[in-house]
Amino acid sequence: MPMGVSVWNENILSSSKKTAEKENEQERKKREVFYNFSSGCKTFLQMACVGALLAGIGLAVVLTLYLSQQSYNDTVNNTSTGVSTTSISFSAVTTATTSSSTSSSTSITSSTTSITSNTCTSGWQGITILYHCYNNCTGHSSYLQYTYSYVAIANTTRITFAFRDDSYFFAFDNITIWGNAAPSTQLISNGGFETGHISPWTYCNPNVASNAGKVQLGSTAYNGYTYTPYSGMYFYMDGSVGAPDYLSQTFATTIGSTYNISYWLYNGAGGTGVSVDVIMSV
Image 1 (cartoon, rainbow, N blue to C red):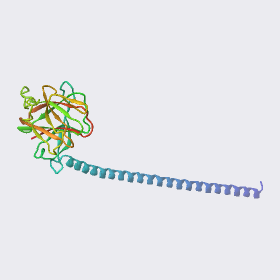
Image 2 (image 1 turned 60 degrees about the vertical axis):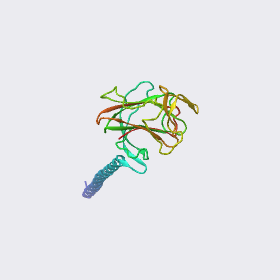
Image 3 (image 1 turned 135 degrees about the horizontal axis):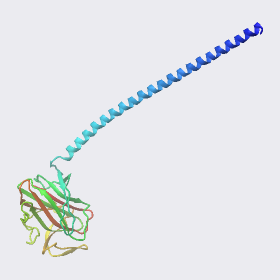
Image 4 (image 1 turned 30 degrees about the vertical axis):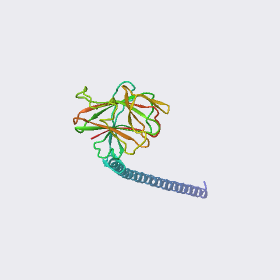
């Protein structure tokens, strides 16, 4: 082979080798740039995730503290006791039986509610609500029996029935109270109103409402409904308009002892402008 051709071939090979090395170097730099970029993104994402996690933890702590404070405030607001210009606040214990023929027990549920402060309720202490309905007092075609259990907190206890019915009446009869220690001893006097008089019950009508409660002899009809005694000749009939009136009686109790309350109530119409409260106090 001529020398000139050999040199020319060597130059070509040398140039190709340099070109390949240059291309390899460029590829290596590209890979380094891509790797550095990827590593940077990964580091950035890791830092962003850590930052978001820390921010979430901080927000959770703030929310926990806020909700704890709100819960505390709600507890304080819902368990206060005392007489204000508009209401008496107290913890209530509610049970009810709606059996038309037999007595049965129900679970006891604690709640917080209020009653109107007026000349009838002023001075009441240790208040417990046994039953309450307002504008959701379901009407029934016959008398229903309601029964409750109550643990005494004083040596003398007051039971009060408050009724309101703007359009119709309640028929109320056969109130009985007895203690577990002496179930045969009746603690309420004139519970069936068979004396024909309200005594020894105490009646209070703070708003001088019309159609106020009274002892009724025999049957009477009003606005399509007939009101009769549950048993005997007399019953208590109440259609207090605009605000409730109150029927109360006190009886002797032993602190810590359990007492059972039973009565029969007829609410023919139900509807709005209707309320019933059964209240224990001392």
